[in-house]
Image (cartoon, rainbow, N blue to C red):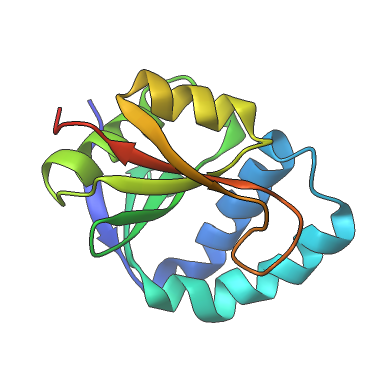
Length: 147
C-alpha cells in the first residue's frame, strides 16, 4: 500500500528527475532537442501551475501527479516503479479524492493511452498539436463515471 503526500517547491529538483526518467522511458517519439526544451518549462512554470502529489518510499519519489481543477495535467512514474501500482494509486487518488475527470495524453504514448482506457477513461476528442503547438497529437480523455 502506498501513501500519497502533497509535494511542494522543495521537491521540484527530484520531481524533474522523475519526469525526465519517465519521459525517456515512455516518450520515444520525442526528439532529444524537444525534451531538453521542455525540461526548464516543466521546472520553472508547469510545476507552479498545478497541485502536486506524490508517492515516496524511504524519502525517494516513485511517481507524482499534477492536477488543476478537474484536469490531470501530469502523471509520471519513475521507470523503476512502473507496473507496481504507483500510477494506479495516484490516478485513483486524482479521481476519488480530487474529483478529476479529464486528462490529455500524447497519442504516440501508447502505454499511457492503454492505461487510461483500462482505468475507465474514454476518448472525447483529439488535437493534432500538443499544448505548445508542436506536432505531437493529443487525445482528450474523459472519465465516463467516477470509479
